[in-house]
Image (cartoon, rainbow, N blue to C red; front, side, top):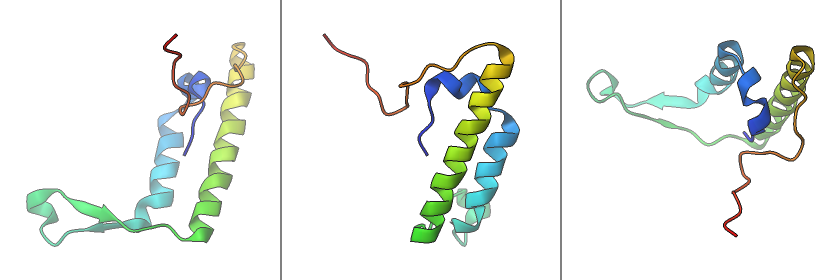
Length: 87
């Protein structure tokens, strides 16, 4: 999921929990989970990826609305994938 960094301050614990629960069914614990604390995440299907994109877009819309209500306008073009310029 890509998230615009300018909207990060408007993210809530509930938003995070919603995304965690949406992907929880993919988690497969190892038999020794109680001892090792490890597991694996099974690959997502095409349908699951489409739902993930939809959830991401909806979350971005929610965060933009929260930014507007708080009086802090969202800055377009800022994303987690952008790297700072080295020049």
